[in-house]
Length: 422
View 1 (tube, rainbow, N blue to C red):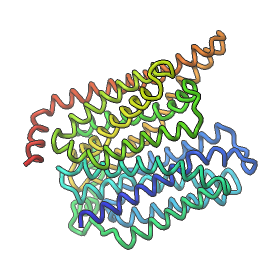
View 2: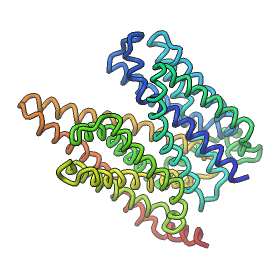
View 3: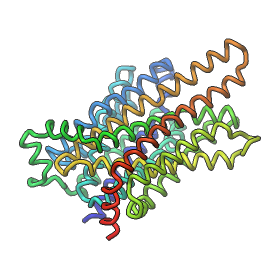
View 4: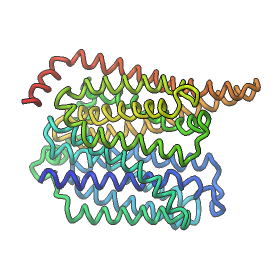
């Protein structure tokens, strides 16, 4: 019974992320087309509306899953996401477009519920391995989603949204018939929710210094990763002259590495070393690669060096994020899994809003300065250094926090590693 639900949860998250990935390359062209005539700022608001709704509703859905069960929350949220895609595909005004994105953001906050389900059916020793499946589903979703969106748009710019809706409804059908409920009547989460102690328990948990450290480090990781993903296309275009198709291949490469690490290796690595050492190593790799990649160009390392740098991005992030999610889950009891993992996903949503905004400010200010003195080539190059090095500095702070956290909890995690090994 432990394998089958994990497969269903993996499939659920994968289909969710494929749908999200489909939107990325298509929505700007769709919204700026003759039907809507949206400005670039409006397109940005469309994307932002999704993230803001996830920020607000991830902990709400997580708490509802503690009270009413993981299965109904997952089922309703997937159906809601499908309806959101249908609204996008059949939209006739900008207001309907926004309604579709807002509904998708509200119901798309179900990742925390999927993570809580994994927490229900895994032991603490196998928790990171289970959370790694979520990361692997993310990686595959970002590999296939944008490619599917680009291909289907040849038959009409609304077709990808219809396909994404069909995927959601197929996903809901699969979940309805195959996924058992884990929050039974005697489950600590349901007892806690029924007793009305959820909010007080959550506030008490957030005072836990372990959870506080985890959430801060997780936030810094996601901010840095968002800066990288926002700036990487500009980097490849400016330095190597790549177009969207070639950059898409590079993102696919990053996604495949993430799938290998999070889908296959993370469980063994955690059993051998523990989560915190992997967070430290991941932060070191990520910070170093963000610092070094701006030096890479056709005459200085070429494609091979860029692949190495991109690989270190992916490996560093893939070692750390499932480990941090596992640590967040382990920092609270069974009664609070849905709520705390919902808070964790809200932190991620906030970081995904902060990262691109910070990258845009850094790049935009540098370009304005370049126009003022006429040295556009040099200053555009300089802006890439500033942007990537800002991400590196953020990761260096995360590295210092992770090292401090590891040292202050060294004895505790040594005992955990011994228990896992035995």
